[in-house]
Amino acid sequence: MPAFVLDIKDLDAIGREFAFVVEPSWLAAELEGTDLRAHPERSKGTLEVRVQRSNDDVLVQAHVVTGLVADCDRCLEEVFLPIDVRVTTLLSPEGSGPIDVEFAEDALDRDTYRGDEVILDEIVREHIVLEVPMQIHCPGGCEMPSIPASVRGPDDFGAKPEVDPRFASLLKLKDDSKKDQE
Ligand SMILES: [Zn+2]
Image 1 (cartoon, rainbow, N blue to C red):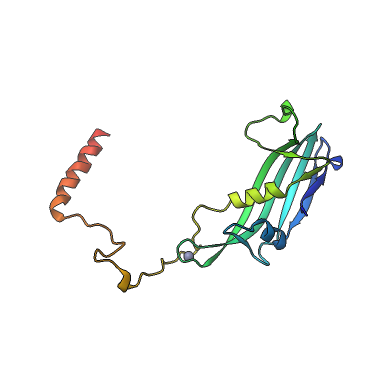
Image 2: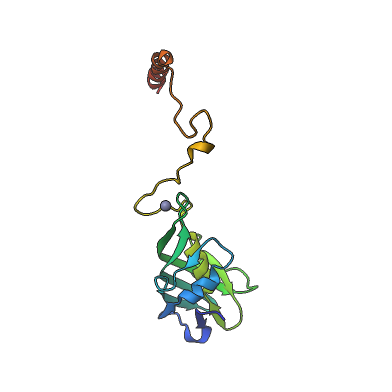
């Protein structure tokens, strides 16, 4: 069952505002199959939408506030990621022709709807997921799990390569000549 449904008959050119509750159970279902999870309490959020309709085109400005849980890439601890995202999407009836020029700005996201209902679930899900950073780290910073000495290689795995002092002056010359060229 979709959670965020607008009836096309309720929409007009002046614009209307709607508010929905984002339930953790909804988010949990939407995140199934990803590395992300809903938090049983903290994922409870809001979806506020302002909707304008021009003939069959529907312009949706949405503000989603929720949050989700992911694993830290470094220490694998759970990290709560607050989500606060604004989305503007233009929806047209499925299979319709070119979009009404009044709204046809290329900066807009585009989508379609079917029948008399504009269902926002997929748009909301997509933009929540897009807000998740590529790299997830604990907000306070954390350490890499330490590698036991027994599995360390002879080259002291992870250490920075050190420049032989005999080459250091040569490298400096190289750096200086590079700067001169710039
Ligand atoms: Zn961490």
